Each structure stands twice: as C-alpha cells, then as structure tokens.
Length: 505
Image (cartoon, rainbow, N blue to C red):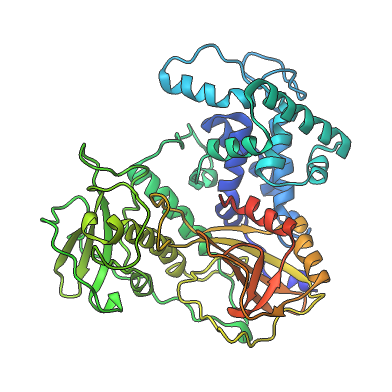
C-alpha cells in the first residue's frame, strides 16, 4: 500500500532532477556534446510512452530503466563511416586529426577512453564513475558478472600499461572529463537542432544553467502530511532594483565595516561581481549573475573586514571581485575583496552557498517526489532527544541531496556548486534498508564526522508513512531529524554509493 501513498514524479520532473547525470554519463560514453544529447534523448524518448508503467515498478527504480535504455542506445549507435559494432573492436571513435588546437586537446584527453572497446568503456564508466556494482552492470548489459569482471580487468590493464592510469587515476580522469552541470532544458524540447558546448562555459551561460538546474531540482518538494509539516517558504523576493548590477557603475569601493547581525536588517541584497582585467587574480568560471535577496540566505553571509576572523592559508592575493550591497534605504555599498578577511575568499564561499540555498528556499512546493529544500534554517537540537530511527525500519522512498558548505578557512579558491539531488532507485534503497536491518540510530555524546565541503541529506519516507530527514557532513553517520546526538551509522558501501551518486569530490 505504501507504494501508492506518495505521488510519483512526472516525466518532466524526473528529467529536470536526473537529466544532468544522464548527460554526464552519456558524454563519457561518446565524448561529444551533440552525440551525448542525442543519446540521452533517445533513452528518454523510449521511456516517455511507458513512464506510468515504469513508475509502478517501485519508488525511484526509474534510474535503472533509464540507464538500461541509455546503454542499449549507445551499443546500437553507429559510428560515422563504420558498421554498427556492439562489441566495438578497437577505439570507439576514429580520429583524423583535429582541425584546431581545442579539438586536438580534446582528442588527447579522450585518448584513453577512445582506446577501449565500446563495451569496456560502458563498464568502466558505469562502475568507476556512476558507482554501480559489477552485478548491476551485468544486469544492464544482460551478461554474466564474470564477463563484466573480465571487461573491467582488461580495460584497467590497458589503461595502466598504455597510459599509466591505475584505478584511482581512472576515477579522477572520468570526473575531470565529465561536464560539471550540463543544462537539461534541451532535453524537454520536442526537437533539438544542435547541442551547445558545455565544457569551458563562462559568464552568464554558466550562471543561468547552474542556477536554473538548481532551482528546478530543489523545487520538487512534496506536500507534507500534518505531522511532518515544515514551514512553507515565503513568496519569492521582490525584484532588486537594476542599480545592483555588475553591468552598472558601482563607484569606488569603500572601507568595509563590521555589520551587526542580522545582515538582512541593514541590506536587501548582495551581489558578487568578478574582475576579469589583466590585473585580476580571478580564476575559474564567473559567479552567478543573480543577487542574493532572500533574508535567510543574506543572514548566512558574514563579510568580515580585513584582519578580523580566523587566519587562512596562503591563497591568491590581489583584486578579484567587488561585493555590492543594496541598503534598505536604496543606497549601494561596494567593498573590494582585498579589504575583506582572508582576501575575501571566505566571503565568496559564503556567497556561493547562499546563492545555491536561496534557489532551494524560494522554490515553490510541489506534489512531486521528495526534493531538496534549503538547509540554512534547519533547526539543530544539540540534546539529541527524538524518536530516532529504529532498527529494522524500512524506507520505501528517498531522495539524496548534496548541499555545499562554506569553508571558514578555504584551502582553494571557492567554486559555485548548486544543490544537487537524486532519486534513490531500488538498489540504493536496498542498501539503506540493509544498514537499517543491521542497526538503527544510537545516542552519542558527539559524532566522529569532521566537517568538509558538503552536507549530505537524505529525505525518506518509511513504510509507516513517517517522513524522516537524515543529515551528515561526512556521509558516514547521519543525524536523525536534526538531533545532533541521535546518530545513525551507515556502511562504507552506503557512503561510497552516496558519493558516487551525488558526484561529491
């Protein structure tokens, strides 16, 4: 009965939530933007007519079916100027000398994958990038586990002997090659004339794509039953005056001053504008072009003046960005990053997190599958008092989320990461339920987790209808419903599964 209690995600909702991950996998299989887009669209076109039947297989089992469709479409795909060859005897693409430096560089980076047979490449990507077990891959390929094991061993031996990559090196190579957050909007269009270039995007293209995916993914939040209700987010903030824009003149930066919290009592919006001239030390993609306007997101910012706060490691020093603050009275304040604590890098990390969480917080609720709401205002109970999670509890539906965390002492120049979310399929739910069969949550004085750059959140519904939220900063032990001393330890396999599913580096 529990299978029918929760509404299934619509086809479009699923594409928004998981399309980016399908595109990342497809890109590694084919090594080309346009071909990857065609491959994913072929799998989605096959799934669309039978979506209602696929949804009845069980909560979140759509991932398995979509991966199967994707792999089958790839193995049937003809290479230009060659016969269809599912076994792919030899490189998967024929290289005839790229016409320009960019294409030549791309070909060199893809050379290790191109050296594999088509089936070997599928096995390597699914096992080492998507985190599937050899048994799951065997099921997708309709082969014996022994065959998958031989494909993987042969591929790793070739990559080691010819290119010097061990298994860890192959994982790193796959992660570096895959596009970070490919846009999914084209997957929802009826026809696509051509695919955009995902790699090397800068400026507004990166900002619109990343924030757009984050807004749509985290907006899929279910209607809550009475006992599990969480306050609904308020209406989206009013549009910020155009005066707060990186395109306009912000004037000379002033001397930063300490701001008495909360920040939202003094300012209505904040915006980071990167400097990209020859004197700038800025590196990487440009920051999101949308200002932070939500009050809770604003209050998470603490732009401390230079010389205050904790010391930081040596990072690049010099002009990188301007922080623009729109006052409640309509005035604009501009601060230079060099005048902020630790050259402004902690403030930039906080701005990136606030931007990502603002998208989660201001998204309207949905009757779809369990989503990824903002964690900025989640209450934390240090006493650990709560119902806990009993041994033997069964989860019937779950969504895993990855929320970026701001680092007080950044070890590298911060990067923008949207909130990521993935529906857990049948194999992933089975992994969680196996851990629950072994043990439930326990009372502890303090956890063993050391806070990193991410917060893992699992929102799940049990077979009794209870909605439970599990959170962790390391992925090894999860606080139950915000109770910091009510911890549920999970197995190493579950931790690895979550890291692979959410692509946490």
